[in-house]
Length: 123
Image 1 (cartoon, one colour):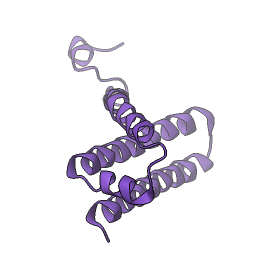
Image 2: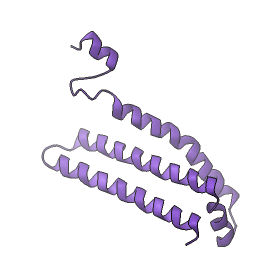
Image 3: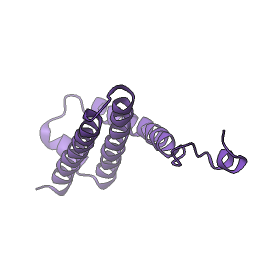
Image 4: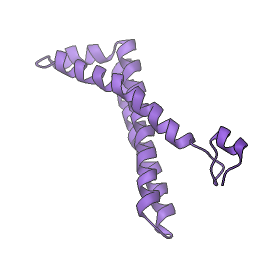
């Protein structure tokens, strides 16, 4: 049973509370308008040539929105993978799987950020 102070703070037996829960919800809410922006960007550039699309993604606000989407999606992916692994993987493989999932999410996020920076900076 939780003490009244623990109930107010939202802390469970792990003393970490609902931090992961709220972080996942925050990234999910952030992803909604960012993904809509991505879909709108794709739809408005159907049939455009490479130079036009590259010029569009080189705009600072577009590049910033895409960076925000990639970072938010990578964090959201890492949280989701970790939760699934914690629920369904047992034993020593759990730590290795969480470590691999974390490196995978970081690698995907880093690759996306580098690609967006390369396009936006024109190199």
